[in-house]
Image: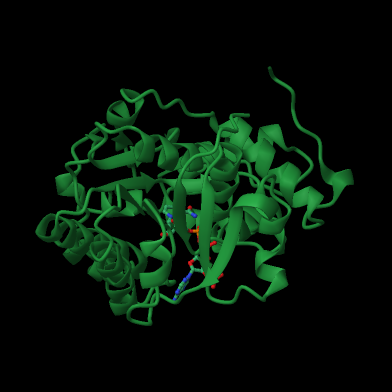
Length: 327
Ligand SMILES: NC(=O)c1ccc[n+]([C@@H]2O[C@H](COP(=O)([O-])OP(=O)(O)OC[C@H]3O[C@@H](n4cnc5c(N)ncnc54)[C@H](OP(=O)(O)O)[C@@H]3O)[C@@H](O)[C@H]2O)c1
């Protein structure tokens, strides 16, 4: 663990699933972290952050809300870097205005080095089949089609896409050094006892609930610790610029459940599931981030770690656990 003292950075939505890992890794590498949360006094939501190594010495939690103009001014003014991970669930206007609200605070701080925005691979991959040739490798030049998302009512992807586009425009107009991380579906240990929407879906799958993953179809998966490292790598690498897809592997839902049912035979995971969208063959290119030195953990490791964590938090029974050891 590196632990030389580094500068002061802000993490918005610090108590969230992804942000908590980011705070953990930033503290471990010596940063002073100003985390924003909507209610610093809510122990259920923030308690896990105070247990992180270095938190007592170098973590401060401050109240800020994306929906309140100027709410981030003071905290951003005190920092040299900003990681903007907070995201209101699906409300379109609040996603765009919330991101612009944080960037307006960034504009007021002339000594800010860089802003790292947590976007999503859903800003890249959702488009009509005719725009996805067989086995296409999608890279950072690809944007999801808003018409396609509207036709399927995928509001999350619309909100993330429009928020990221608005961020690029604002950063360009105002000379802000912005980079964006585009994670696929994030899997791994939950630092908080409170489960994020993503982990709730994973828990559901291990309890035999398949609707969510069936609807997700073919999807990329990435370990949460890699997502945290990727944010820090992009912050610390001066030549990093633009968007970065953050993904380990892309699997059809059927491939995923076959793998998981074999690896975790004592949980009620079906051995196969229908691919409701027909045959999908797209993949993601991660050449751009790998070129900066990023490496990704495999799907087996991310689900092993997720299951260990769900057991530790009491959401899955220990006795049900048995991993098929095929190493
Ligand atoms: N999880 C994934 O698979 C995945 C994949 C790709 C991208 N992402 C992106 O990663 C980021 C974090 O996602 P996550 O999975 O960690 O979600 P999460 O656990 O639900 O965290 C979201 C955070 O946003 C905060 N937030 C919501 N509305 C807010 C508001 N009005 N003002 C201030 N903060 C607000 C929440 O704060 P409170 O604690 O106050 O509610 C929470 O800490 C998001 O930008 C998401 O789009 C996630």
